[in-house]
Amino acid sequence: MSVAKKPNKKITTRKLLEMKEASEKISMLTAYDYSMAKIIDGAGVDIILVGDSASNVMAGNETTLPITLDHMIWHATSVVKAVKRALVVVDVPFGSYQGNSSEALRSSIRIMKESGGHAVKMEGGIEIKESIQRVLTAGIPVLGHLGLTPQSIYKFGTYTVRAKEDVEANKLLEDAKMLEEIGCFGIVLEKIPSTLAKKVAKAVKIPIIGIGAGPDVDGQVLVLHDMLGITQDFKPRFLRQYADLNKIMNEAVGNYIKDIKDLDFPNEKESY
Ligand code: KIV
Image 1 (cartoon, helix red, strand yellow):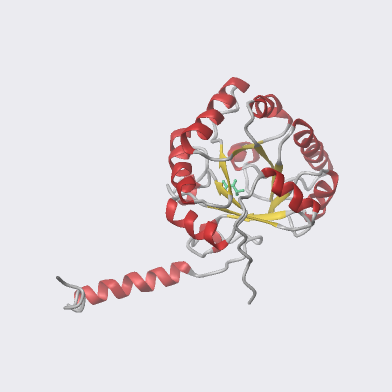
Image 2 (cartoon, rainbow, N blue to C red):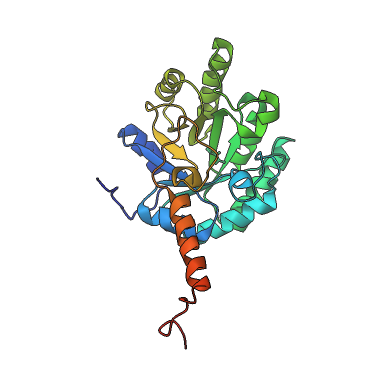
């Protein structure tokens, strides 16, 4: 099994553009805390996303809607402390940028100032163009997010594949071109047909990072707890599980409990 190279140079938004130009694929994973961020940064992942999926994974909520700006800043602060190389992108949570562009700017500035993150991500196209523009003019790098945008789950009503019909597919393509034009450094495309994702990746010069968007994009992102097999009840078709940490952790904790009950732990060497 080949192991990823671990170059030391810090990842910047410019570097990501160069990677697309050189056809070098970009790796991205979520992290919400210091310990996990340290492991995945050390393993050489290019982008760490402090995703609002923390709402599901960390807090056990059904959707990403309840997580607050303060929560996101707390998670991002922990991640930033661990990271030496990756670009840290922080989700601007639901309700803290859709109102107007001043609100978007205020929230993004708080994220950058208080957490030390390197960029923000916002969900949506033309509807939030003004907000994204305002944030960009403050010098804050923005990663777009189109396709299945979980903050709009109650509008969609379902987590199924988006943009299968021409009208939605055409809008998505136009939104992607618009996001490039106003200065986003990349776009996440979530759960859309591979053919459409390929078309978008060809139509823009900025990197397209896919999740459930097929292989013909510039990089891939997964939720860390899903790909490590910690999450139990979420197994979409796009997810490749690289470990079964749930099983490993379950066994470890079971052994710990058994050793205590059997009066085996702690032994003499483990005592003062
Ligand atoms: O919050 C998140 O984890 C995300 C990824 C699914 C892209 O936005």
